[in-house]
Amino acid sequence: MDPLFYIKTFGCQMNVHDSDTISQILINKGYKKTDSINDAHIILINTCAVRQKAEQKALTLIGRLASLKSKKPDIISGIIGCVAQEQGTSLLKRFPFIDLVLGPRNIYHIDDLLDQIKEGRGKASSLDLTCEPPTLPTCNGYVKGRVATFLKIMEGCDNFCTYCIVPFVRGRETSLPAEDIINKSKYLISQGIKEITLIGQNVNSYNTKNNALPTFPGLLKELDSIAGLKRLRFITSHPKDLSDELIGSFGELKSLCSHIHLPVQSGSDNILKLMNRKYTRDKYISLIERIKKTRPDITITSDLIVGFPGETEKDFEDSLQLIDKIEFDNLFSFKYSERPKTSALELPGKLDEKEKQRRLSILQEKQKKITLSKNKLMEGTIQEILVEGPGKKGDSQLTGRTSGNKVVNFFANKNLKGQLVRVKIIKGFQNSLLGELVDKYNQKVYEVM
Image (tube, rainbow, N blue to C red; front, side, top):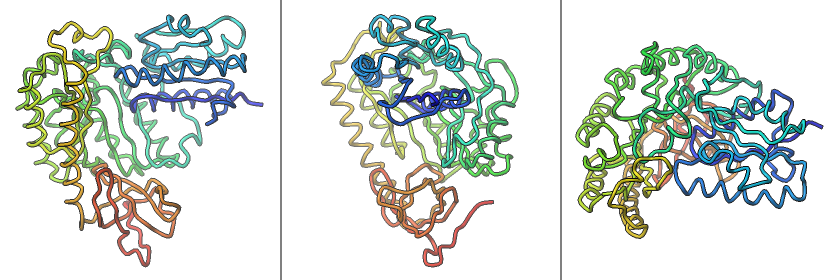
């Protein structure tokens, strides 16, 4: 019987992509994936260290593996990802039942390391931050049933924002060859994928470090020309690298979706400087205005941190005012979380948890009202939806997303998965939209060729 592996993923899109990469490597080597941790011969926990909460969740699950390993001592268990890189081989001492520690830039060697463990050559670890990503793996049938997927175009980060651990756990910025990205995109489309989201710590600095071509806008243009690609997205962008050419892409490329995620992190120039973000509040506002002028229907989402060391009440009010001015479609907001090795650890003026939570609650309540209002403004409009599959209310309900990345649920009496259809929005809710299929009585489907 082929050995079964189970992988649990914590954190962001990069970790989801890394787990997919590991899965494809192992399947190509004869392993089979299982959704049951109790049936698995190999258990892998893919961890995130960007915020303390995500790290703690992963470590809690790892601790629970002790009892499972005591019952089934032949199980191979491994910690991979950012926490593995951050804490290194000390995890093997902290959790003696763990067999493997693998950093995010070393995941491509996982089959060799598993062989080492199975052959009785001891526990294994690989934590080299200088590894260059190899050609992206392929595995026929792996994405079967999916409509959309992530595609990594770069690894690491050179920005060294003072709160961020990424450069210390994913290494310095490295762009993958454009030829590999284009070939993998064509392969994914041949496997049934309709929408690709390009991911990286800072995608719009793609190829900037080595002055290579294509630039990020150039890469988008090449991908836009691929037959069969219906939608193209990217995440995450850094405001300091948002060029005029990239902004112009939103008005020129047919597959590029009308959504950008542009993390602002704070509305205060004082805090932005302490964060080493390399742009000002006014610069950020100017970028948003230019994007909206180029693509008036674009949706804007962002990240924002409250309670950063030294954040005064005035700094916090600046963030609230920024939210009022821009009116983000959605905002991912967090309390500042201390991370090892980051320079923000040395900053004075740390806020207590109670005050950070107070500020976060105020900010989130403000954004909830804005998000709901913007969703309600869509009522009565007709939106093009890429159908992703069944909704939560049975087979007759389908779900998909607008070009602006808003979730839409609607009812239909046939399978439209993977197709672009027109839906009239009849109700806007906090986190989704309810719609009805245009020409629902004859089930006419409007598909972009």
